[in-house]
Length: 136
Image 1 (cartoon, rainbow, N blue to C red):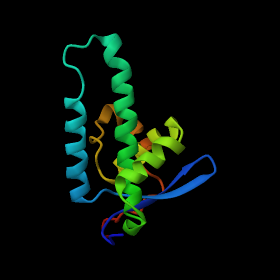
Image 2: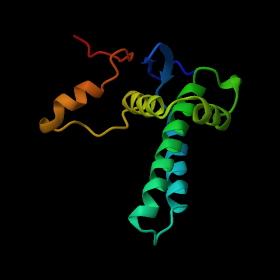
Image 3: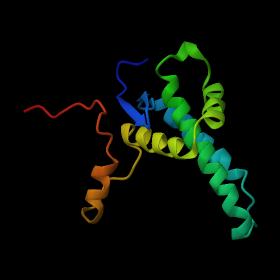
Image 4: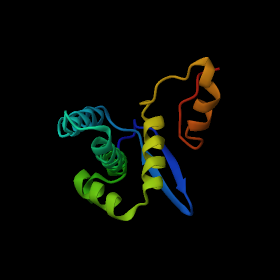
């Protein structure tokens, strides 16, 4: 675990899990994974064919992002791919989506809130995330 990465307590139902910000290398790997996944989508597919493929892709991308975050807790525990498969086979879809968003907030991977949706962004913030505060 890197002492430089932010972490936060993610709660889903009765589960409490510490999730971590992605490292710079993990962020690069995540972007490469997204690019590879997009190349696998058929270019000439109609909306009816493409929709289930996009849903599957989003679930897999979210699970991988969460696996990368969990890996930071104990790199000796295993590789990211093993964690990815454990998440896909053992977590409900809503938990994967919520954890994905939580990690993105920790990792500053979401766009800045505009004045029109500032309230929405405040709700998305990870309330228990350890953040550095500005000096007074």
